[in-house]
Length: 494
Ligand SMILES: [Zn+2]
Image (cartoon, rainbow, N blue to C red):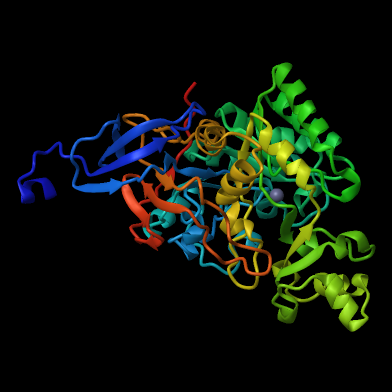
C-alpha cells in the first residue's frame, strides 16, 4: 500500500543495512557489505538497492538473530509479550517447554503460575501467543513433567498401561500440531519418579515425527556419566535425536568432568547417535528451591552455595546469600533451608546456586555441537539470575572477545544456524537471500552483559538493532513494540 501511496516502484526494498561485517551464521569469515530486506525476508546480501529505510551499520557486525534454545518463557510470552529481556540481547527466537515443563497441556502451575489458561493444546496456545503480539518467534516442546502431572498427578510410581497410553497420546498430538520434540526434567518432581522405560515409550512418538528428545538429565553431579548414558540409551531405543540441556558438572567435587562427559557424547555420535547440547555462560544455576533439597536430609554444602532470587514467603531474603543470613542471625544453614522449602508458597521460591566451574563453561563453549541457552526464569519480581538478561552478549563479550574461547563467527554459528537446524526453525539462522529477516546488528568491540547477581535487570551494551521478521524491534536501545514475532511449527528439512 505504501508503494502506491508514495508512487515508488513496487520492488523498493523496505530496509537497507549498509557498511556491515556480515557473520552469516555459517561460521565462515566476515564478508563486508550491505544487506537488503523486503517484507519479512532478506532480499539481497552483499549490496543493497536504495530502500525506504536506510541504516548505516558503521562497520558493526550483522548476524542472524540469536536463538535462545533453552528458555522457560512459555508463560512470559503471554505475560510480557514485549520480551524486552530477550530482545535486548539480540534474540529473535526462543524455544520453550524445557526441563519437562510446558504450557501444553495447561496443567503445570510451575510454569504458568496463576495465569488464565484459555487453551488445551498447542494450536490453542499458539493462538493465544499470536494474539499477544510477541516480539520474538517461538518454537515449543511438550514436557514430560507436565504430561505426567496431567495424567497421574504427583504419583511416585510407574504408570499403568492406560496412563502410559494417555501420556503417549498427549505427546503424539503435540508432535502432530508442531512441537519440536519432547523434553524431560528427570531431576524434578514428578519426572524423577519415572523409570527409563517410561521415557523411552514417550519418546517414540517424538521420534516418529522426526523430533528431538531434549533432556535436563537425571543427574548433573556425581552420576553425570550415568545420566548421559541414560540419554544415549533413550535415543538409541526410541530411534530419536537427542539434546542435553545446560550441560554441566555440578558441585566442586565434579568440576572438570564436562570434558569426559563430552567425550561420551562424541563417542555416542561416532557410533551413530545424534546428540547436541546447550550451555549457559554462568557459574550459578537457578530453579525452584524445593526441588533441590530433601527436607529430611538437607544438603549443607548446597545450602551454602544458595542465593535467594524470589521468595513470597520470606521476601526479606531476596537477593541474599544464605551464608550471610546465617552469619548475621546465628541460624544454621540447614534450618534456613528447611524453613524455606516447607513454607506455604515453597513452589514459588526460586534460588540461585553457585555450583559450576568457570573452566567447564569454556570447555563446553568450545564444543562444535554446543548451542547457547539462557535457562532464564522470567520471574521479574525479586532478583532473578542475570542469565535472563545477559546470556548472549556475555558469550560474545566475555568468552569471545575477552577470553578468546572461539572466533566470533563460530560463536554466531552456535547461536544461530546450529540452533535453527536442530530445532526446526526453517529458513532462519542464516543471512542468505530468501531467508527470514531475523537479524541483529552489534558492536563486537563493546558488546557485553551488564546484569549481575546483585543487580540483574539491566540490558546489555553493544546491541545496536534487532530485526524480527523484517520489522525493526529494537533500535538504539529503544524497544519499538512492533510485536512481529511468530509461533513456529516444527519442520525438519532432511
Ligand atoms: Zn533444567
